[in-house]
Length: 123
Image (cartoon, rainbow, N blue to C red):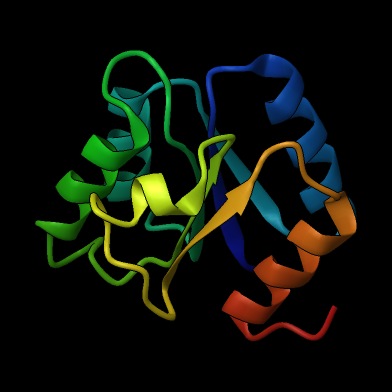
């Protein structure tokens, strides 16, 4: 079972994502701020991180930069969740096969399809 870390400071989004991912047979970890996210990622090494860009105690880009500095976490795929246009973010993070942006508000099926694709799952 693949593990996904949800990082968002909005509890309603966390609950919706948790339900969606658990129904799709993923193990789910949750962090409500950047500090918790970094500690959870280092401790549990999830298979993928859903990372909000704007949150307290270290925004998503700061979390991403910290994780990329550690050999243990630098290879974890990241999907940034944000209402900001990707062009505003592109200057701050490199988009690769392992890093992408998904705009809020989003359709659950589309997000799940992207997650499955990034994890190589056929769910």
